[in-house]
Length: 222
Image (cartoon, rainbow, N blue to C red):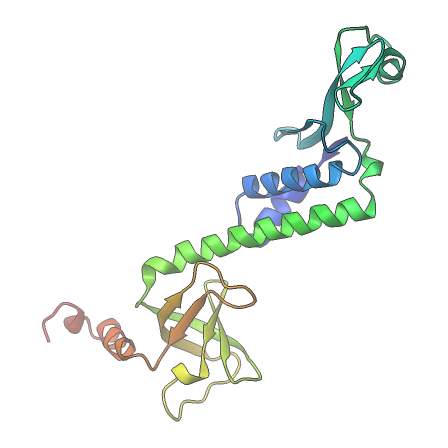
């Protein structure tokens, strides 16, 4: 199978803010899963990607034999010459996966693996971005309020959790409000929810806010 996917990789990379190599590796892994529906599980599946051409190839290699005994590793001369008319006994031949064999099920399998890999890369990027800033003040925009009154704030294109219990007494916020808060928790991964939690109730918030607004405090002059 030969498929030009480079433009799709670049687009997905831009949309998800992850490196193209992450997408490439995800596609390779997903194609191994999908290809197993065409090739035998015992066959050695090769997946080559040529970035400059944006081409993906999926194939297996078999030895051409007079009387094949191992279908996963060997192929008859008659079958080999249907692929390559110049095939001869004792040589090896590449057998490509026809693109049409991927089908709907295989494509769905590939999609799931790709999305999971991209999701993992996104979580790692969020953790690496915010973990070193634990205890720092960040500014975000309130995007929505959940039924449980917890708020979702967007900070640097990342959805962050602002729990209702972490706001100051009598504070009220509406969608679109800019909110300053201190980073309270950063989780390596958090299934089904934001990885970062912020607070305005935490004792460090007022101290950090004053340091931000009054440089003399940060310098220790007050």
